[in-house]
Length: 198
Image 1: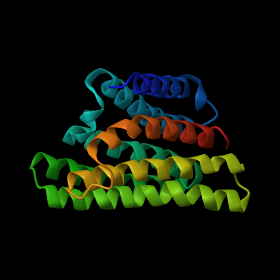
Image 2 (image 1 turned 60 degrees about the vertical axis):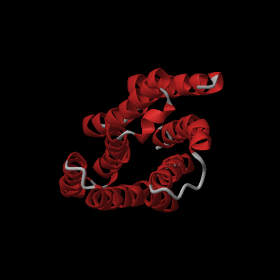
Image 3 (image 1 turned 30 degrees about the vertical axis):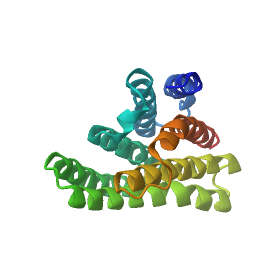
């Protein structure tokens, strides 16, 4: 791994760690729990890549872990802005995630991909469009759009990995390994700006 990527991954762990410790204090207990969980995924993912190499992102367990990232952030947003639907939304995404895990463990790749698409589609819609709606309504500051930006970055990285695994890569493996840490850093910074701008 090139040294610059090691520095970038170290920065990801620092940003995520700072957010866990001090960056989400203005929220209630439940949203803080969800946001802490997702920043923890950022932190642990960066540490594992730092220690084991960026190629760990190809492992099935990495796919399961990264699927929890948008799940946690979207649950936090729903808990803050749509509390009446918090339990129902939590039930739906939990069922989808459980289906993904079960099918991955059974090595049913096609059905696992279906659950992953549904899970990421639902959580991605919440994370991308809800900040836009909230900013238009004047409910939050424009900086909250950082969540939409972070979601877009995570989606781009996820699509690049999905195409690589399908055998129809947009970028070759080395290119993906090179840019992935930078995308991760930009995403965690964007989420931090957004969540801190309410």
